[in-house]
Length: 114
Image 1 (cartoon, rainbow, N blue to C red):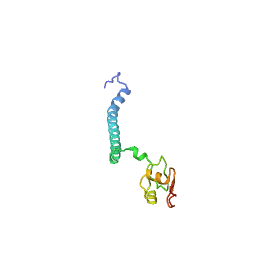
Image 2 (cartoon, helix red, strand yellow):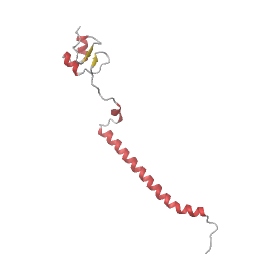
Image 3 (tube, rainbow, N blue to C red):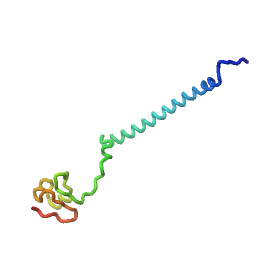
Image 4 (cartoon, rainbow, N blue to C red):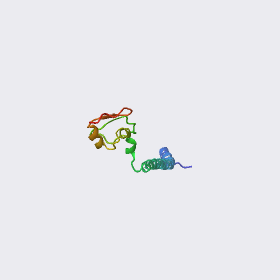
């Protein structure tokens, strides 16, 4: 039996491992692609399920019950307890009747009108 002197042990090992490495690399690539695809689909379902609002909606604070409200320039909406106390639905009407900066507290009587 003749020996080939120009083929080393390293070359034989490399040839044997080459096929295994190719199959393993392909399996790893498929696994990564599947994982990424599942993650993207989940994120899209979250976004589409919320009407396209995405992360912006989850970053907002949950609404808390309002127990104190001041009719000032920064006020955005009139809470229901203020509407019930005054009978007025708009901030403009409340400021006209009670004055700017008047404070309403839930469970307490309405302040005196000007």
